[in-house]
Length: 155
Image (tube, rainbow, N blue to C red; front, top):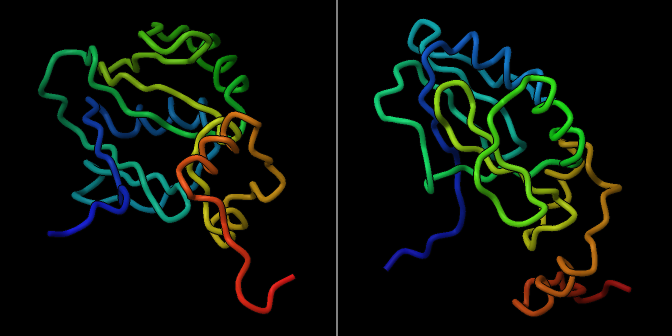
């Protein structure tokens, strides 16, 4: 049986890809990986993963179903969401979640608070080498046995 090891990308349906890129560009700093299908798809780079935006929303607004994005500064996103007057969505206490204009439910968490760790090369590419995990995230990483172990011959 194959082991699930990660997410390569997630695709969100939007009405207009250019409008979505403009909005998400006001919420987050990102690099555009590229476009396809004559501009009906766009790919937002997140290091070794990406977010795909695809024209043609077909379902009603999300409720419980949501996408969780990890950022280097959740409070900066909170301020941007407020400036854009986006509707709040259910999240954990103290969390940040919103509905974009197309009904996508997006939850935002801070990298320092999550239990996953980016590889050194990805951290370098994203410019987040200086971000330190907070105590709760460090405990979760250790409890799950995910802390990096020193390599043979390493100090």
